[in-house]
Image (cartoon, rainbow, N blue to C red):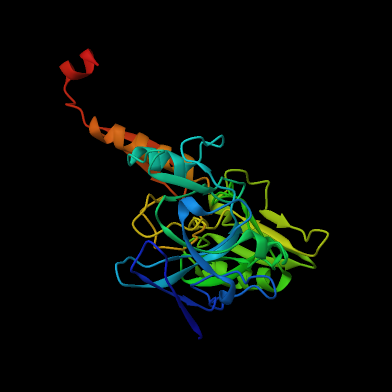
Length: 319
């Protein structure tokens, strides 16, 4: 892997720029358009990023030698002042909760259907391809998107699916090929998620059926999944959340546990629906402060509250 070492006028740090890594099962790096590579990168502070610059990487912590932390998906910057988020995304909510202020942080890219805002400390070093050079290439999102990866119980899979949107939730469907659907059908009955399910092919259709003894509606044999116009199958109700997609710089305001620099996790399936999950967790914490515990039965889908109470005749009369 070839390297370039750059510096910035106001810093003694050395920034090591490397080729963009090839995608793997664990590191999902979307390739840059043909001709875009690390020989075009320059290093600037986040507050110096301009509209049209292509953000490609952040860096490890300094001082001294700082190594490239490529973002999984490079993006064209549209900087704006922090604190004015029309989407009221989770990243901005978390940043405000951690005390971020408009004079210290900047938003490099506003929220979209797939991810929250990219918020970093204004002096964060960023590797970019300047707008006047980037304009000579196709936009970063013209490169073929990487498929999303899903698993059953983190044991079976991963299964490749078309990328899902920011609003995707664990009970929503993913779109897979016939070959992937066949693999899911083979694995599902052996997994914890599918322990009460059976899978059977009826021509081109996939029937996923539950144990007859557990059906609340005996007249329904199960879910019949037909291929769509592109020959793909939409299978849902089985998938755990994914991590967020947006890159977040090391040590800066981050969402959901401050992921490492340049990692764009998917909220699952964040890895989305993440804001509602956050609010549900907040509700559970508020209940716990009052001695009330929320329980969920994943098999039956029921939720109930356990309230610690002195169960005497007097206590019940005064409730």
